[in-house]
Length: 132
Picture: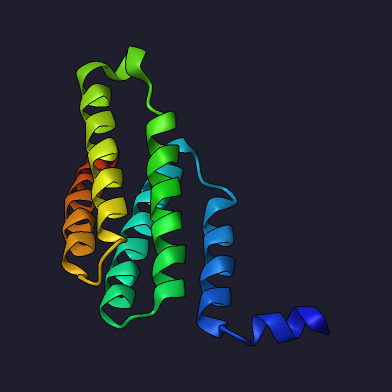
């Protein structure tokens, strides 16, 4: 019964975890990257809200999640096949990590939103490239 009581603490978070697990179960590499972008942008938007509302634990959790996703995206770049695009993305991810970490020290949500918007543009380009 302890498991059920943990789930009832935050039903929305529980649903997101179950939903994410379901979406990743049969996803290929490019689909997983798309999911990472979605989760990254969501984490940054929640961090912005948390910063503005002084929800420090939530902000810390979302900053940690966003930073981990940025590291994962960078670690899986294929520099041999991706060439200049991979090198550019590596710089973007490193810069985004720096901005997120610097923003985590304050209470302004704007820097988190700016990073989220930049990465949302990259995610949209990724999605369009996959669709083509």
